[in-house]
Length: 311
Image (cartoon, rainbow, N blue to C red; front, side):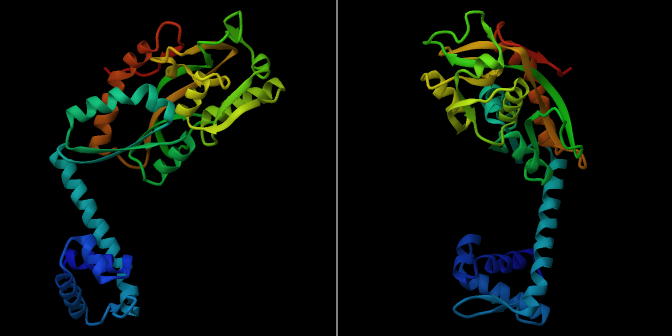
């Protein structure tokens, strides 16, 4: 019995076709058929019913979960060896909220790729809540997330990075929403709001501020991603509550602070029950080396405080 035979068997069960399985695995169909037949001969029973539709025999039903587990264990062994060899190859799955992709990750990913060109980076852009769920389920290796007031899942290890203020974004081409340079939530409630979709902690923080002030938001547009929200504000559709990091490099946006202030904490998170893979640790080190530069790049008007520095 070989891992290759098990891989062919699993491929056939996944697509229910010898022809399609051969295409997926990159092998000639006669070769695939011979290998699966050799596996059946060694086990002493047919695993597949061969017909117009390929189905599992009772023996095949019993073997399938074992085959999947053996293939997964083999992949884990390859990963472990790759870790010992070093950062010369492999994959790193990084998650981040859209606002952090805009204001934080671009330079970090560029430098990390230059330092480790053989590491294949997978970037998942989503709200903090789905990212935390993906981390917990092992679908991500590391993620940049927003820490809610209630804290993150204790099953995650977090390193706070930045504390940034949330401000009102309005179009630079229009009139300032406040002659004082600041405004309250009550004053904000009189203006049309562009709001990000559900899943963003920014949305929950903003709506809670409205509830605390006893007012109701008046929406211009509701349900967008961060980039769409910023573009809608720039076009004059409405105003939006956004993190200070996104104002950097956007001269078409005007920043007006909220009083009393609203803040959010940015952290890098991973699962606490396993040691970080070497690539994830290297990415974290690269990110920490940029934290001070990220805060400085927002300009003197923005309110972004560094919580962790690389030493």
